[in-house]
Image (tube, rainbow over all chains, first blue to last red; front, side, top):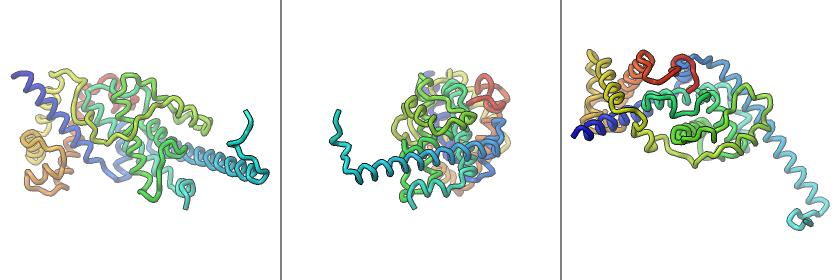
Length: 86
Length: 219
């Protein structure tokens, strides 16, 4: 009997927690508030993530450009990478 | 516009704040639910998890197709997946700490992150771990509920929502709204207030564990 009551309390807490997850806000101001509640500076985080993202995108562009050039050169000189020697 | 073009045209500063804020929201809920910061990797901050999500999408490890929807909701699902993975995993070492301070060595670091991480497929936000509270002693669970009810005392609209959750086993705001005959916006508002009360209680009583999240400690 006692166990059932405990299980029920756990389930209730789980349901409440799940409902809390449901009410996430789409507002920028509330996102900033969540960060401030953790003692974090939203502007600083935004700036760092922006730098990180732009640097990563540049890396991807460079990689894709290199791959494209390599493929073009191979095509021009008639090298098929599938036929390369071991 | 191709994917890279789309990625370049994003306002990353705003996306970063929104995503880190979302991560903080979810992480604080998780900490309240489990009563411990142990469920998540020590040393990881919301910005770190948001960074991992962003890098995994930009690197192509997680394939975002602009034709299938906007970027931010996709990134949020990646964060959900990472958080669920962290909460489920007993071995948090599988997730590399990717400090924002390390931005100078990117993008090479992306390769390293991909090798260290072992991310599962996308897990819906409402995965089983979200529905149960496993890691807390029974007394703490009881105490947490009692404290929440006590905090809601004198606010009949909040008590009404709490009672509906208990009485009808409802897991969606829409369902609670139908039960009590009020608009969904009313229920959402009550849930936000209840959440604020719950987090406040946790911060005051220290039930969220050492270095509670409210003090700026890692999640």
